Length: 185
Image 1 (cartoon, helix red, strand yellow):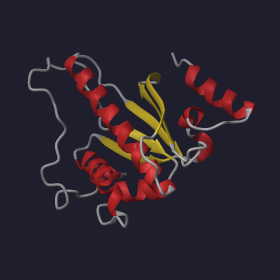
Image 2: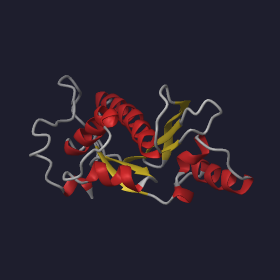
Image 3: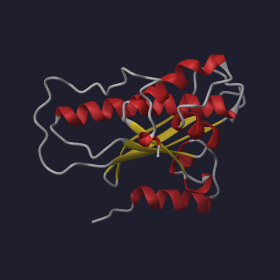
C-alpha cells in the first residue's frame, strides 16, 4: 500500500489541509473510498471523458462525469488527469466532513484500473517521462505523501466509474447500477 512508503525525501512538507477552526471530531471514524476512470479519446472530437464516484461508508455521495478540457495524447495522461480531478473533489469532501466534526479512519482509498497510473502514484522511485503531465503527477503523489489518498488497482470490469465514462452493455450497466444502489445495513 502506498501509505507505507517513505515519501519524506520526495515531499517533505506534504500535509493535509486540516481546518484550524474545525470542531472536535466526535463519534466513530468513517471510511471513504472512490472509483475513478477515464475514457481516452472516446468522443468524436477526441477528448477524453472523466468519471468518478466517491463513497462515504458504503453510500455514494459524490459523482462526476464530464469531458476533459484538454486533449490527452495517451491513456496514461487521460487517467492521470481524471485522478487529479477526483483528488480535488476528495480533498474538498474531506475538508467539509471535518468541518462537521466527522473523524476519518485513514486516507481515502481511490480505486483505478490503469496500472501505470497506480504504479507511478504509489512508488516514490517512479519517474515521469511526459513533462506535460508533471503538475497532475506531482499533485497526486503529494496527496499520497500527505496520507490523503491511497491508490489501489481494481480490475476494469469491477470499476464502478465505468458507468460514467463509457457506453456499456446492458448487463454491465445493470451490474454497476446494482452496486451503486445496494444498501448495506
